[in-house]
Image (cartoon, rainbow, N blue to C red; front, top):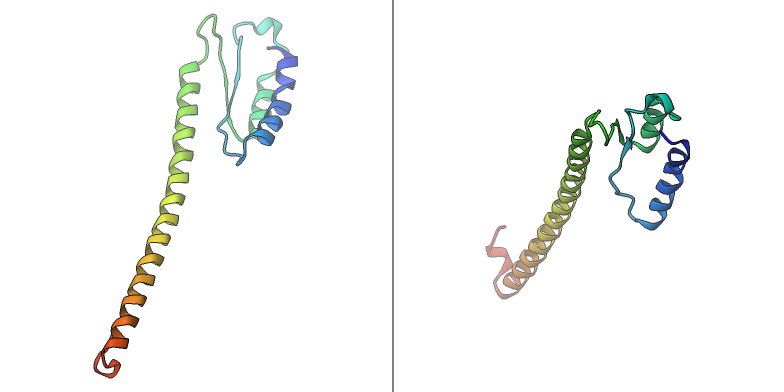
Length: 126
């Protein structure tokens, strides 16, 4: 409802980006006081546009009347956090798998080289 707090969202996001690196912060934009339509200073369209700029979900609700679905906003935030953690986990797993493969290949190379040095290499085919 309040224009001033709405205009602080982007500067706060920029500050958050400066402080929190890497920039993997999960955001949702929630417009409160949806029950006070007569004193609205920020349109739904403006909220949706800002949410698009921030690449996040947008919800409107009222803490007073329960209008809107604040629980859905909370669940969306949880889903997004979980999705990002899964993506990061997959990246880490791939990285870990790569390191394990490299370590195994290095060990096998060392073992086979040692073995070939001790045995007659012409008698063995790998």
